[in-house]
Image 1 (tube, rainbow, N blue to C red):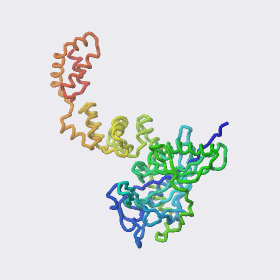
Image 2: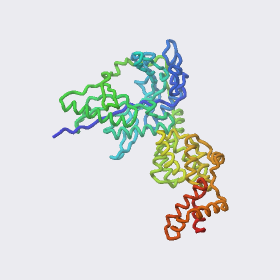
Image 3: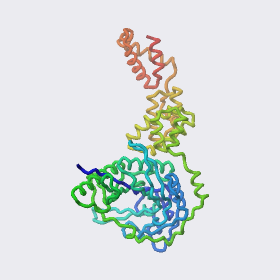
Image 4: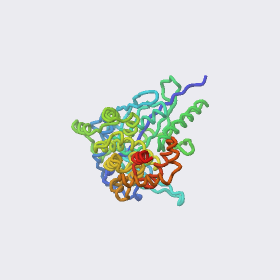
Length: 476
């Protein structure tokens, strides 16, 4: 009988924190920028420059730790991780090995198999390295230090995951929690959330873990799922052929759908860690922790329960809306301005999602304001514009956040509610379409639809279809 294998997975997730400035200096952390313009003597590793910890980094790290049920290390410090690499300007990285800021946490995930806790071994603060750009044309490598010193937290899980599905659920949960905290935007495509996958396999029922490999270069959930499947297959093939899995770091090539070895895996002693002599230890008192605790937001689970009680909208809508903190904020603020919850939810669920998909955008990228959405809803409620005009206005609002009231005024899109003018047009349409009139009188209900359409066309779309219908029936 063929052997049954179990996959054992642990993740190291790097999250770029949403501070305005770097972890140990005042340089900007903005994404992009001309190479080496967001730099100073500290983040380019000049001799004699001294790092000073950014307090906001500490606050974010503690907030994430509390939200993931960790114990906060109230006496912690930074260590130097020594390695020589061109994008690493000091030839060491400031990180935390001995006393990481958060330890022993857990998050709950839900998959098709039900609920499960994934343990968090630790979360530590560290600085990012620079970025190497390999120039094929001039056959050289260039280094950009803009990213050097950008603050990161590294979230190290326990090896508690057993499938790609659990890994994705865990990452979704972390991303959601961190976005709700405002600690990072967690955009995988911009590298503000990166995951390295440690994976090993063992026979079902075995106590011991197998030899693990680490996979890097994963910048989308789909790539992560594919890499897990690919590496699992590769390791099973090796064992089946009587060979051994080598502990190493591998790079996943998502285009080819395969991984290749980068380097054999280092252990902590290879890095000669020692406490950083330039940075003082951090001592956190209970009052500081209480302060951070008091600032924690309402997280998704609590939001979903409250929406159920407070707003009369479907379960599915609640799930989608609370799936993005930004979308949930827009929803709540628009309702607070007096719009009906179901109407707000309809605009978000139908038109907004459609336009996000068409423009390849995330819900976090929505630009229109709650005020403008509320105005648009009240314009349609008051029948000042009809539904097709409303959609047209919404598209412009989605793109440029225009004020719908002003836009409707300027472009002359208001519905004509003047019954006299409308009656005149309806009479003309009846006179011009004797065949449809005949059909309607002979009991063909559908014919009235054609006449409504013709009237709308004559009115350039600026009329209330309900009113046209009423007039047509009266005149016919």
